[in-house]
Length: 152
Image (cartoon, one colour):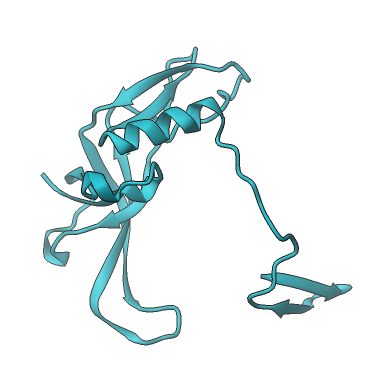
């Protein structure tokens, strides 16, 4: 989406479907490439920094600008917070609500935002979840290779 403004943010003009550049090339770096390979295999990687903190997904650099060490995230994963979405972006009621959660593995310092597939009555912060990957032939080496998280 492109935008233009005439001095005040209240006067921002949006042009949906129009981009400023013709092509954007994203380079994931070494950590991103290794994460992509791991996701294709049904695994999740993080980066362990000198201070012992583990970040998932792995960052290119630790907060102290060192590179850190890639480690496999094994979990268990826990639901920290969640929200239930009842409407789509256009205000139409969804047939089935979607749960979006912040899911943190016990062996990492942060977590991921992802879809949680669980009965609304069972949802509670701290519940243990597991990642459910798409079938191997549908994986692309991106975070959405994790289709959703579900209760253990």
